[in-house]
Length: 198
Image 1 (cartoon, rainbow, N blue to C red):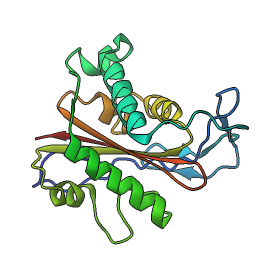
Image 2 (tube, helix red, strand yellow):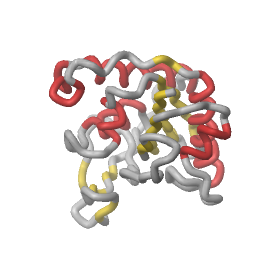
Image 3 (tube, one colour):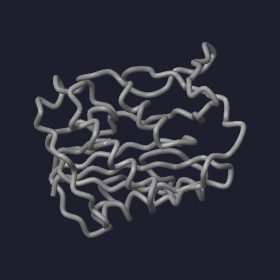
């Protein structure tokens, strides 16, 4: 989801409707019978074998900070120079934005849905403004996975120069990030990355 300003129409760019888990070998398998999902690119659902044994149980706050580091590494990477033009600066960690993201991740985990819009109709704009944050540009990435690394790589594997999760990560105009991660009972991580230009 990406909005340029509060007066523009809220645009839903692409909801990642992918269910995945980290396999022992770390590779994803695309099921040919998986339904086409998403707009406008028709991404397929990716199903991966769950891990056979649990890894270390890191505190979700550490995972949130690590996810923010992965975002900044991608923004600085020469691999994405064509998209960033070298102008995607490191993002400022925004604790209020992180609380907004964490609350959305917790709500999805608690109520069992996976969407940028809550079952009650609350949008990213509603959540940001409800947190008391001013903004000129906002966007959001969501994932449901067993690892932050697999979610991050899945975002970056999306097509370049398209309005998608990859573009949100590499957006040169945003300056702040907040990441919220909640571990659900079944072991999945609900991950929300919120980006903002105040």
